[in-house]
Image 1 (tube, rainbow, N blue to C red):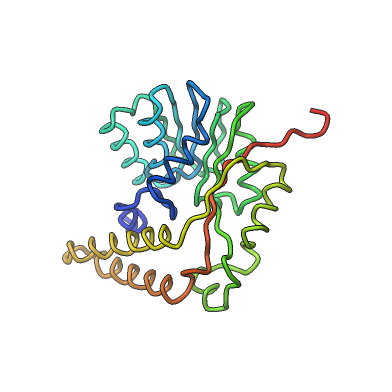
Image 2: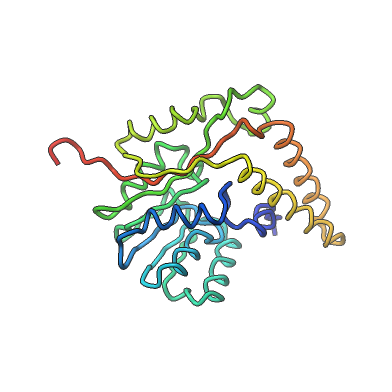
Length: 252
């Protein structure tokens, strides 16, 4: 079986984005507010952290998650059973860009997974397809806090054009026909907590399993990731999570 580094790296921070628990909950409540029986869809749900929190906080909610990682989905299912919400959660093992729902959803989430669609514009198109009338999308995307240098771009495997600054990122959203009704820009502290959790969880697993054939690879990846963060993109790559409503076309 292929070593799933991401699964181990997110064990201490299952929300796979630089967001604190408090801000994750606040964004969910902003998205769900006023809905008595909300239906949620997470495109690129991983181990289901957003959906577990929503189903626990809102007993009348129902949710669906989509991801290609079978191991992550198995953990999502097990956690839902442990929380007593499995009967209200449906999981689909399929590429998010290929998922076709039979219904519209009140809240469509894609936080830190826009790469599954090839970028922000295609993600917004997909969210619109899956929204029920009056629904909202919650989209988390990277942006440049400052101009990235060549070393940072190499470390991230990115290009300067992949992201804009914060203003340009919001402009991309509004130009695509969406209106931000709330948002959160991740702080440096949230980034640090996320990265220390990512690298620390993977390092701990490697040290706790010295006889595992993947332990050396895990330790190498954790070390490389930590170096790339501390000596590269820390303070350069930002992250914004937006709660969005679609703007009706003229005449609609």
